[in-house]
Amino acid sequence: MSGRFLSIGECMVELSQAGAGLLRKGFAGDTLNTAWYARACFSAQWAVDYCTALGDDAMSDEMLAFFQEAGIGTSRIRRIKGKSPGLYMISLRDGERSFSYWRENSAARQLAADPDFLRQAIESADVIYFSGITLAILSRDDADTLLAEARRAKASGKLVAFDPNIRPRLWSGYDEMHATISEGARAASLVLPSFDDEAAHFGDGSIEATIERYRALGVHDIVVKNGADGATLNFGGSESFVPAEKVEQVIDTTSAGDSFNGAFLARYLETSDATAAARFAAKVAARVVSEHGALVAKSKLGI
Ligand code: ADP
Picture 1 (cartoon, protein in one colour):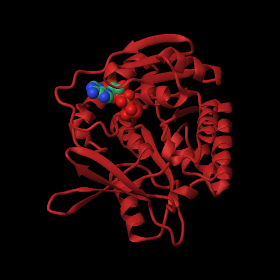
Picture 2 (cartoon, rainbow, N blue to C red):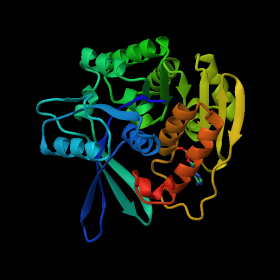
Picture 3 (cartoon, rainbow, N blue to C red):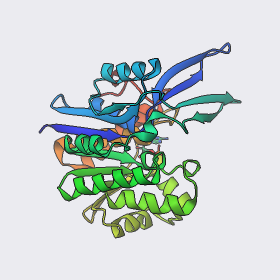
């Protein structure tokens, strides 16, 4: 089987500590990470495209070249005059990582500001992926545009996958966050939440409660990730559990959920076997948490 997978969201410039006061530059962001792992796991019959907005500066050009180098299609990326990508910096103090962000004014905030461009991007794809972070960075009107296009894609029978990826600091208030994330789920056919986020921010007392809440929103297929405690799948009411892989030493959990999503979607779309795809995704995510950084090279993923 072949097709086009489109991931929609924001990739940022990442600055991390490189010792002696130096900083290392990289590129990352939840939906880009998922596109990266989907690309690594899909066969060559599948295209993986990224939909975002970039500026016209040198950093935007570098980011675009980075996507192309990774085999990720860039024809659905809009360029905006005078804008730049967002940026975040990872600081290390006593082994604890903390993050500072400069993303309020990033080009990606306007990724849905041209409705025709967004519609064409979504129409060109067989499978759509977006997240709660994608919705959080958009203006209310632009979030409505994206949600309407996602609903349209779902109604036409396309697989629309959504990771709620709940980040309260990106939202102006809890009510707006709850309402918009629920709308994101309603527009999707497959939702991939992380249980710790859902418990903390929606008050779910159990994985069953998370599944029930998303089913009540009309989501057909649900994968609840639960870190080292594995993942629970409910596909059209039929439930299965897939344990996490044992990891000798967890090095960096950045991108665990994003890599799981990319690997799961790639394998599921090619085989239609959700439980086997989750087993495969758990293996890939276990490799990812055993390495530093958000984007682990395909050669280290054991695939
Ligand atoms: P998120 O990064 O979105 O919070 P999770 O922490 O739930 O996502 O992790 C996603 C997947 O990554 C899990 O379902 C599991 O397969 C794998 N994973 C995460 N942490 C570990 C760990 N400590 N050991 C083994 N696998 C892990």
